[in-house]
Each structure stands twice: as structure tokens, then as C-alpha cells.
Amino acid sequence: MVRLYKSLVRPHLEYCVSAWSPHYFKDKELLERVQHRFTRMFKDLRQRNYGERLKSLNLWPLEERRNRQDLIEVFKVYKGFMRLSIDELFERDANIKGTRGHTLRLKKKQC
Image (cartoon, rainbow, N blue to C red):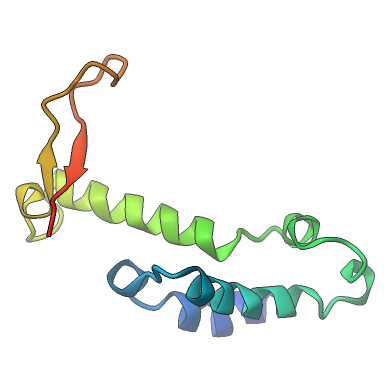
């Protein structure tokens, strides 16, 4: 069942997530509810809470997967693997006091 979920359902939930990642809590909850409902399909796991069910099925919450994908996209832009320039999306922060040794600190540009 987990293989079917990972190959058939989750790709629909995560398609182009770096472009449309939900901002509102209610939208995030609607997506997470799909995975929540899937984990309750296993009779022996129904009594556990959601976090324990995810751990026993070796799944991540969808919010964590979206955060990870966002970090991967920023890395690709920074390293030049994409056509975008890092300066189009971010500006370098001149306040380097709190970075603990590295000189790269990015800020999102204001709209």
C-alpha cells in the first residue's frame, strides 16, 4: 500500500510544489489530510497519533517535504543549475554578524 501511495497519490500532491506551495494554513491542512487519511487505512496503526503512524510507515509530513524541495530549488539556483540568477530572487544580506562563520546569507526580495 505504501508503494502505491508513493507512486500514485503523492506525486499529485507534490506536482510543481516549488511553484505553488500553499501559503495558508487551511490549504496546507487539506493536503496533509490526504496523507493523514491514508495512514489511518492500516488497522494496526489506527490507535496511534499521526506522527507515530508516519514514523512506522517511514513517511515524512508533506510540509517537511515541501520545505526540503524549496531548499533544493534554492541550492540549484545558487549553484547555477537553473537559468535563473540568484540575484533575481534574493539579495545578499549585508548584516553578516549572526551567520556563525559562513558569508552567505540570503534575504527574500520585497515585492
